[in-house]
Image (tube, rainbow, N blue to C red; front, side, top):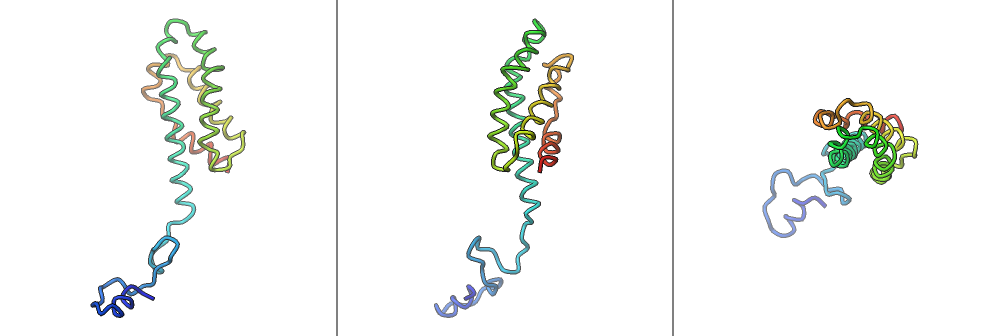
Length: 142
């Protein structure tokens, strides 16, 4: 029954817009446009990429100033400790997408390389825009 049919049974006046039946799953009108699965996936991938980028920046920011004092030690930390930590984070983040470890490795590897190859990690972090790169890497793995 439509909502107006129910209102009629309850001796209530009809209301404009209540003549379409609802789909019980999400209570949308039958004729309402449906968000495509592609749009939903794109938003989900964008969210994951954003969270990964923010985690990378938080983690590196805590130690970036050390690069100016001892670059070799900083690079070693990035390639070993940071890489392991961020790899685990990325793995958890992309897990809902069913991504293989290759995609996770590509994301973490490209991030580590960017940091190690930068001249000044402190300044590099201020302009590091990774979200689009991460989105591209995830989409390539789909």
